[in-house]
Amino acid sequence: MRGGGLWQLGQSITRRLAQVDKKVVGRRYFASEAELQKTVLYDFHVANGGKMVPFAGWGMPIQYKDSIMESTVNCRQNGSLFDVSHMCGLSLKGKDCIPFLEKLVIADVAALAPGTGTLTVFTNEKGGAIDDSVITKVQNDHMYIVVNAGCRDKDLAHIEEHMKAFKAKGGDVSWHIHDERSLLALQGPLSASVLQHLTKDDLSKLYFGEFRITDINGAYCFITRTGYTGEDGFEISVPSENAVDLAKAILEKSEGKIRLTGLGARDSLRLEAGLCLYGNDMEQHITPVEAGLSWAIGKRRKAEGGFLGAEVILKQLAEGPKIRLVGFTSTGPPPRSHSEIQDEKGTNIGEITSGGFSPCLKKNIAMGYVKSGSHKAGTKAKILVRGKAYDGAVTKKPFVPTKYYKPS
Image (cartoon, rainbow, N blue to C red; front, side, top):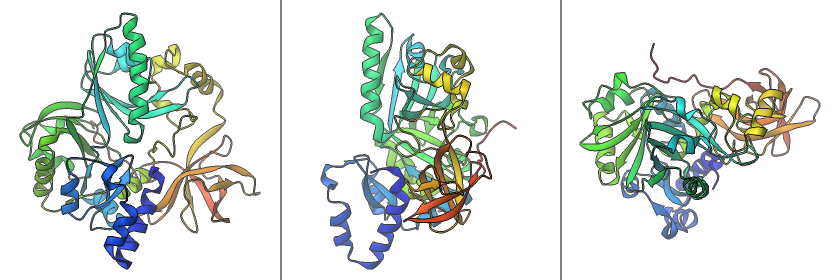
């Protein structure tokens, strides 16, 4: 299932649960439940009213008792707790782990200070995106990486293939996949004050993009001040045996203001924040330059290259890409993935990759690729929804201002 349909699926399930017998809906949506992997929080989700759906081979909550609209707004007003344990955390270790990783990603990994991280992209030989990932330099001989659930198998195969070749030439690098850990994302304005109750570490000194290994609620955790909502927040890697207790403690300390939140609201939150979803807004044939991620290519990497597909990407940086990812607002029904984009004369100029109704802005928002020249903010367009053209305009991203915690 592709992420762009999460919002739609959530709305569909909400309507159906209100209209028909839940057992019937259960058979229809959860037919492959026995084959799905389950996070350690699965039963906790169900006990708290989570509506479980298949996602990237896992049974995950699309929403809880709140609607997706209510959950999205609550995250921005108070906070949300997401189970993102389906994502894959791994560590690269060894004195050569940094030069090894730099062969695979566009970031200037060597320039990262220990305890800091960045968004990056794993590229292929043609410069296309294999996956986007948050990488963190724990120490000069230890990198911590989180990759997308739907890309896990191909990402790990890709890393392993290149690692074997690198080690065969004498390189010192090894890896560990953190299947013994779970991953929680705590997001929203109350996230820091609530989490502070559960750790002795001073979170006011941990800024956006920074990483720390610390005790949280009695468990040995990796925490990164980051997220996928545009809000301040943390991603917490916790030993799986401590995950349910940590989730309960966070909810309890928030006195009901931070709520369990599912993938449906996560999708609308990331869209409002103008963040890419791999499989929709980024794919193997899309380069980081086309996806608007030129900023993630380190200055030294732009000069030296040295990563897969560098020739294609550096040429695009010099000459400009032929297509670009942009934001849109529109009238009429919300645009969806694959909606055609036309200029005012009715000529095709691109395609929507993600779209929906913004719960916080109360209007349609979308992202899509258009031909260069049609990408400037304010450019008027027509967006086709179910065969009918509706007025739209290129709009700057993010749609909702980001609130990352940075030094003042």
